[in-house]
View 1 (cartoon, rainbow, N blue to C red):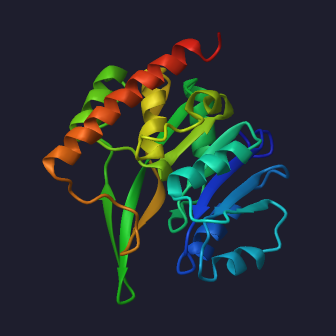
View 2 (tube, rainbow, N blue to C red):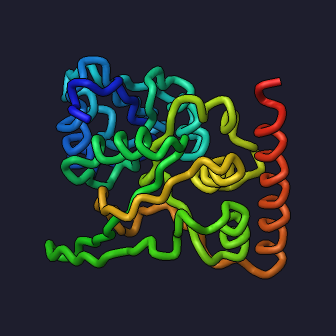
Length: 252
């Protein structure tokens, strides 16, 4: 599909003290927002660095920025951004990655052609040390569109696979199923993937569309003690049941 024939999209980004890499990511996104009604929604999560100034310096009407008066965390900030999104397709974006040229159209077309509500793409990760860029490919071969959606959920539960929000885009119809995020569910991306699998409406795109930056400030989870791991799995099952409930009752 030609970019001039597509519907407008919303890109949702949560920002917290992202001054080091924020401009590079915003540049890579704005380059692809070529529809006049496209929007980049940024929730600034009470940053204390120059993140807000970097954003304001663009003076770009496609950028819509919302300020948190207190630090809400990345999950709640992404929920807020998604709530503000007005367009047909919604992309999620980290503050420190780089969109590969053509990412937007490739995922947009995949959403339309697959008939699914949610698409997750492949990506490369890279780190920067002493100005030397090291890249290594992270393959999504563990994802298979032919594998049952229930099996996907079980593999997430066991820790065999993971989903990353920065690779995701979904149709606006998903909002009524994923919002609000369950307060007890620790990660918004796993929750969105859960809903997509429960609805049997997720497509795994093998193409690399994103450079995912690894650095000391990345949000990550440390290894948990056994009791914490068991409690998290209990909450995972609770979230699974909630996703099933919403899938059944949201339209009634």
